Amino acid sequence: MPQRDEVDRIVEVLSALRKAGAPYQLSPTALVQQTMVSSGTMTNRIDRMVTRKLVERRTDPNDGRGVIVMMTASGRERVDEAITSLVHDETALLSRMSPAEQERLSSLLR
Image 1: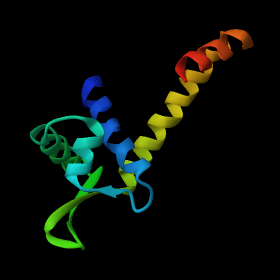
Image 2: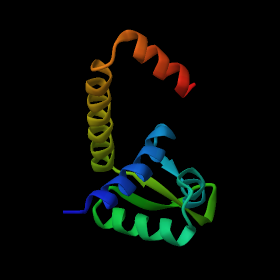
Image 3: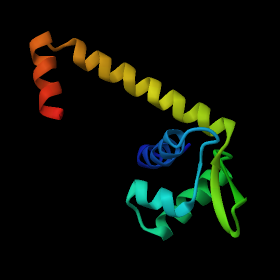
C-alpha cells in the first residue's frame, strides 16, 4: 500500500485530470504546469500510476509524436473517493465553527 505522501501526490495528479473534464486527459506538460513539479518527477508519478492502472498513456490524436495521460475508471473512482472524504472532513471542521466564524473564514479565503 502506498505511503500517505505518495497517495497525496497521486490524488493531486488525478484531481488535475478530473478538473480537465471528460475524457479526463491532459498532456504530461499540462500536468507539470498544474502540479508545479519537474517533468522528471511527473514522469515517475505517471509511471507509478500506470502500474497501478489509475491512468493510461495514449498517443495524442492531434500529434502522433505526443502523449496524453488519460485517467482510467479506477482512477476516477479513487479521486472521487478522495474528494468525497475531503468534503466530509471539511464539513466536520466547519460544523464546529459558528456562522460568524464561517463567514469570517470565507472572507479571509477570498
